[in-house]
Amino acid sequence: MRDMAATSEAESGTPAPAPAPALVHFALAVGGFAIGTTEFATMSLLPCFSRDLRIDAPTAGHVISAYALGVVVGAPLFAVIGANLARRSLLIGLMAIFALANALSALAPSYGWMLLFRFLSGLPHGAYFGIASLVAASLVPTEQRTAAVGRVMLGLTVATIVGVPLANLLGQAIGWRWGFWGFGLVAILASLTAVLVALFAPRDKPQGGGGALRELSALRRSQVWLTLAIGAIGFGGMFAVYTYLTSTLLSVTHAGAAVTPFVLMAFGVGMTAGNLIVPRFADRALMPSAGIMLAWSAVMLALYPFAAHTVATIILDMLAIGFGVALATILQTRLMDVAGEAQGLAAALNHSAFNTANALGPWLGGMAIAAGYGFASTGFVGAGLALAGLVVWALAWAAARH
Image (cartoon, rainbow, N blue to C red):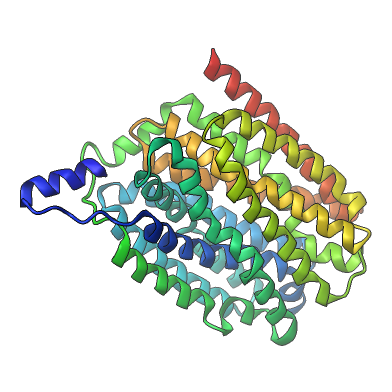
């Protein structure tokens, strides 16, 4: 991108103003806040809309999986289609699609329509975060890439502290549909993101050199697949627990509905702390940091069934589980290292992988619940997935070192 800016200067003879990284990172983080609010709010509102749509909790979990499937499909689709577009223009378009699809989700008249609209809502998610991470990293020195990606992801983590608890409170007080739409959160934030990106993001040109074929070359690299598998499997543990967290609080912890937002906030505080602290070390030792985060998550998820019985312990455990979400930022940077010229597709596929986990975790957790093991059993399911991700990480690191 810097090369393109230099070319533009040379052709025009006028120095192009360099975008301030902090402003660009803030603009991109606002989009992350909007996406994070609706993605995680849906999970926290699961008991509310399951009652309204007359479905049980495991079936309602399929709504989460539908969104995740949309991300899995949309991330590579938009990355390949947008390979010949300027990244700035692509980001603006993705935010427009995101706003419309989430507005439709709030108006869903039945379970079937809800599944469809959540699928459509997920389509722009992966491509947005993937392209936004590339733009953010392009503005800083190489040794600060993970920290730059972490700043973009801060929008999502702050959403779990502010946006998700607020949506949950609204859902409990005046109906789940208001958690998506009533106070205009999605539409306003998505529109604001589009404006901020238009104002502050680098005015890049479409990348030449093969477009879609260049991006598809990422699929020939084994390290790309192994890195994606780490996220797709290892991250499933967190989603297995978080999807049924509200139900666990009501049925296992026997906490009042007023407690739920505070537990959600604790998770968000953990996520935010992880994204502020972990990237500082990950930029020096990327793969070891990923392994540590997977091991951390496995332990904290295994503690969840025991912590779920009191409010104080479940708050502490959810804070610790949230800290492990910093794995997302680490793997995003890892893909930049192993993707070669196919940066756009690889970056977007990272979020396909995480949302494969978002489909896998709730599905396996729902199976454990349906089998009669109870809502707290999702912690053991999650720990197993984190350990499986750790095995894939070991294979990836061994292959890279070899």
